[in-house]
Image (tube, rainbow, N blue to C red; front, side, top):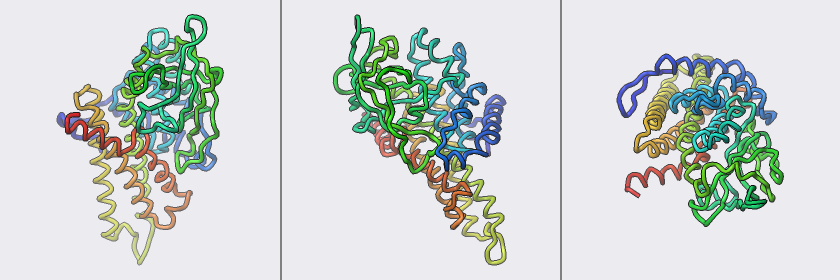
Length: 391
């Protein structure tokens, strides 16, 4: 993999620390994830034990401050990690991303007591975390969420929560749920954020969804039925929930783009190996110019996506004024490119690509959802357009 890229701010090369981070993540993925990924997918097994092994490597709080066990790394560092992990399994890497997004929200917006109570156990991966925003009636229109939290108990010491969240990764397996709830008026100003422990009274989960991909990740509905949550678990102030949710999405979009990039790179690598071994008409099929051109286009598109993603991550690290636009553009471009490259790789395998044994069809299935989650790619276009026309 080339490590020299060109960002909007000028040419840069990964430094020694970043190379070490990348190597560490690749080594873990090769040893602990890649040999098991196909079986996890077939068995629809959530490998909590292996996920927890990433804690001692510093992957439970990649951009969480170090006073609570976080690694305090940047967004480009995170992109390198998720790209490396996803070459072994995009679904595994994506869950680590979701956990980190939830942990970073507590780190950024929590008070000292909340940070000390939750984050050491999250950064160590003793506890796993999920992020709860989407509802059955509010996907892209997140500000329309209906899950309601009302004060109760003596002096309003608790919130009672009622509603449902849908498509929640890790639901039922995670220990902590960072949930967006309505505490006030309709619209974004009435939304707040609660940290909900798994053992909260009134919290339950639906059946594991039968999905096209991401089979190793549990995906369930999160159900709040008079669910009691201590008021001290309110993150920041009432009415800040939409801001908190949106603040986490720029980084989440870059992470999921990195997962697409790594998965697509794996698909291309598999295609290169297969076409160098498969023979037809007296020679290996990589000697046919039509296939060479297709491989060349796949490589070019992946490298363009990589440069774009690294540049967007650098902008987010620099807190550039247009970082949100770049995050949206990168998410749209890289996830579209990643899926197309994986799909082209499957085509190069012919009938064998359709078989589970080769792992290419899994990559195609896993990468398809990246064009939907963390904001659909249609919504990414809306965000970019609004930046362009000044809305």
